[in-house]
Length: 410
Image (cartoon, rainbow, N blue to C red; front, side):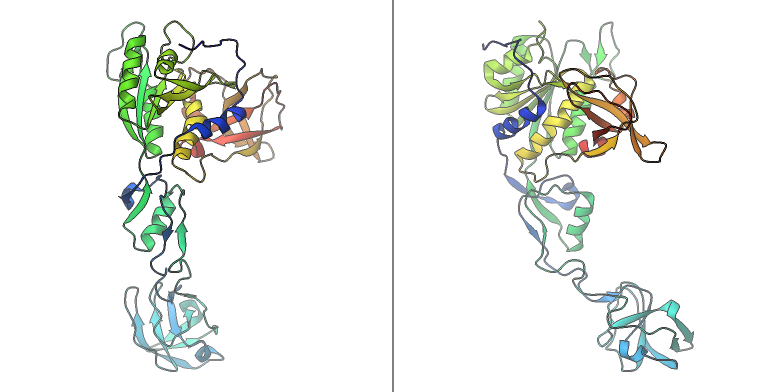
């Protein structure tokens, strides 16, 4: 078994990410899924539009379709020759007449503009035009939204709700995406019991499993539950080996530190090896990654905040990168601190904050009072994470990088 090197310097997260991404296996298999199952999935091949959207020129207003030239200087009555509602197709427009038309209805042949009904006055079967129009006014041209043959989304795009609507607008019912990753999830600790079980002295409910499983399903992964693994080396080794036979990725929580009851690290090393262990971040120092029987492994710390933070900062972008997502990392913004804080230590800190307004009505970050890695409820109170670099003090008004949970957890 390789030595653990307890005195080895911690790895800064900026230095850890490039080799982590380079070590990842690529999972580029594809499958066609119904649109209802495509949300959050990664496009497997370029998607082109089979039709124009809209497929025909149509009215952008309720009003009257006509030839623009017939509206120029018109002060007399113009006969209304037909009525066209959305979903109906009109007859060719007779010269010098108008067609009553409603929003979304196709323009009749011969018409090139729509005068909105507010700029007309109805007179029995005719109208007076109060304001002239020019060709194309109040008309949505065919292909104005999407042109047939245009690339809608490229390979590697992660589909958002609005993207699903775009695909549906061109008539698609299925889309080719990366195959869902199969991820084994296991938690370690003799003290853990499932919700619904009566707690005995010394026991706590297994919350990490539910948090990480929900984050994985948001990424479109198929989660294979391996359950709670007791604090015993042989059992841990056996479960890891079984998991590797079934999945693409293995994620564990707990057991990656150096305590006498922490067996995940030596078990992983006996079945493969660790590429990374112990990062210069707070919370989340004991994060580990490597291979188990050739399958990608991520070891998260056992404290709920540490497990969550290391997942969203490291595992989430890693899983997206494995599927060649074109945007694996979440965006951060600079936001002024609404607090003062003494200089931190050698680890980069990710503190839980709420996003509010300062006295000048600008954005401002406020830290939660309790930053313990064991306070899982704080993740529901906070809006996101503020980043404090190593050996850095914070004064009110200083700009901090801010990562929104809305970005990190979708």
